[in-house]
Length: 233
Length: 233
Picture 1 (tube, helix red, strand yellow):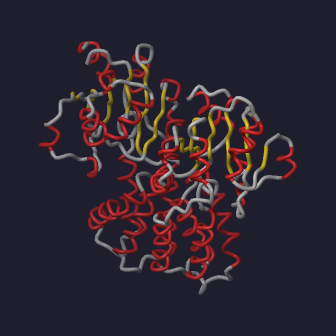
Picture 2 (spheres, one colour):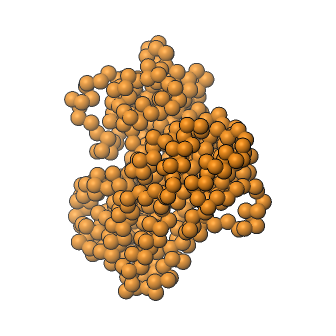
Picture 3 (cartoon, one colour):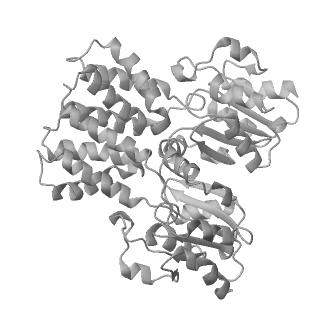
């Protein structure tokens, strides 16, 4: 990892808590829909609906809320009431206003790295959700660049690196998703560090065989990052 | 308008048809909700709901769909059925797949300008909606830069110009909204051309008194743009 000069960070579940908020909302939705369904059905059907809607609605809270409503309609066999659907929309609104909870060590780590490296947020999702979280996180001053994208493919990374005239060999991506943050970056010749989070959305899970094919590093905690980079130089 | 070297174009109702698709969906929704309401009520209440939700949900089809559902629930006094709500979600999905219809003269105009100027799409809205429309429009090859933003304020324009190291005096913005495309650009010292579209969403309307305060030009048709720029130099 010689010659790194730009470090990009994924945001959700790398800089701050995200997936647990979605899971909590799912649980609240199960309570609303209790009259109509056996609660464990919801998670499976919801995931199926989200995957079906992904191409049209993308990632983020609005997409999740619409998928929750569709799942409620289908699983209740059209019996869910307008009032209950309004409650689901209200859950979506609560998610948008949920306080941003930084993961331990994030701010200190950024402070340690910001003088020596250009720092970037590189997150996928809904533009407004992510902008709002960046603003409310208070982390904005530590970052030189902010990129919110609709998906994290090798093409996305190539486009962004070319836009900022960054050579892949000078680029390090840090994130919790092997699928989105690690494997595509390794594929285009960049460096990547995987910091697993205790909950991962199924959609971001990767077949371990595929993960073996590329070289990347894994750390338990973002606080280990500055030392790890210094040792690797 | 000497020394223009970057021309940015708004997208919805400047490059392609947009507002009529929203209006058409509103009409279809009125038919679905006919049993519950006096149709003209819908437009007014919908706009009120959209404005209330704007800060949380932003612009775009998902936000519009969620506001339609909330409006239906409220105006039907909780009587709208799950099946009818599913129909509203399906309207949102149809909008996302609606063919992109270029406005007359757009492609020729871009072709005339692209050798001499750097061209940018600068559009506000939902990331995925706008990316999909840019891809499906086929206009992508004419543009040097693409910027999708959550709102078009003076701060947004200042940030983008600084990001690309563009002096405001070298920047021309072209669009159909006085509020979003013209006034904020004039305020930061850039150039702007207003090309009105026959339908404007109420939210983009501006008090004529405010519009008088800044200097900008108005054209009837995007095809007049190359001649206008040449004459002004």
